[in-house]
Image 1 (cartoon, helix red, strand yellow):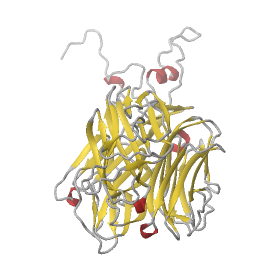
Image 2 (tube, helix red, strand yellow):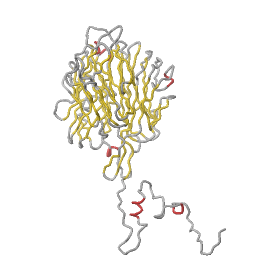
Image 3 (spheres, one colour):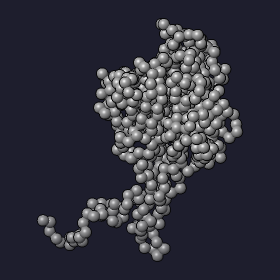
Length: 531
């Protein structure tokens, strides 16, 4: 862990507003029942959580709740790695504030034949001071467990430009062909959606989300879907993202009635100009199995501008944003039983990556490393798409400088694949640290990481420094002497962002540079000749 203390002994927790809790040791079987229970409750038998939480958010571990001392707009991302203990059942995930009704509800079917299963759930919410956030789950019958790699990342949106549009009811559509799940006018669309937005434009009749100012934007799209015909086959769903009607990201997954409802998440960073807009589509026009899929509640499109502003708190200031990278694979990896980095060109017959946006983070395809140019708090979202010939366990790892910081294990069956698994991490990094991701299949069972696999890394909060607050003393003293070189005036003229001001006197020049010369300067007398 880097040394993130400033001269006052303050850490990132004093400056930014965030919370991250990660399950590092799985719970005992059956800790979750049919009533909603907190996921991040340390009282669950055998479970172990690690946490990194800022001072203005209180994580109460034995209740699994988060209390906010300061109002703000927050993005909540839950990566739930769970299983069912005795029978295939639907699990329900909810977010709610205080005792109010949930502002987010998402469902995921868990098949005991290939669990644990990861599902991603996310929402943007306006939080008031002293609100308590509850993140909970329940199973429709029997009991469930929490597995290693389950995590939540909560970060404040400070740019003022955001939209999060969520289906709060299930659709009844039977579309064959491409449709936009956030276009509320299509036949059989969900009866209700909720939207949290500011500084961006939304057109619900077209399912369109428009940037009003230029910048880099985080795009997280959670697709929750179910086969309209429960007697049908296993159609392939092509999911696409478009910018100004041009496709920039495509991913194919399979729908299976024994896996309904299923979930698939995109997470990318895209540079948008003022007026650029985004859309998403599902296309089930499969030649062999033309079954349609229906939109399920929890389906959410979130997009917001990453900040580049200064954070001020008392006598220090810090920096949001800046370094970021978003890379998308456009080919399938070579099938292998060995651990692979899906962003290492050696994992492919032909290198086929697309860097959607990057600055301040160096991506090297030769080794699949992402090296950060600046210290800070970083969010990592790795969304892999996997396919295999025989079902088995896949381990997903995020590492920093070769050391594992997050591991998630889950099963993948060859019936409903390809399918995605999202792994997230919230990291404190130094300049020069590098991030790698790996997937590893159990012995003898090769797995392929499919086109559409993506990773996004961005700095949420960066370094900080002392704020210069010294007021000039004034050039004329009370005794009418000139006070050009007083300490107060020097500090005001040359802000102290170094250990010492660079000049010995109030006049900047070569002769007054510190350390230039310790000898007394030579004197030129009147009448001396030029040499």
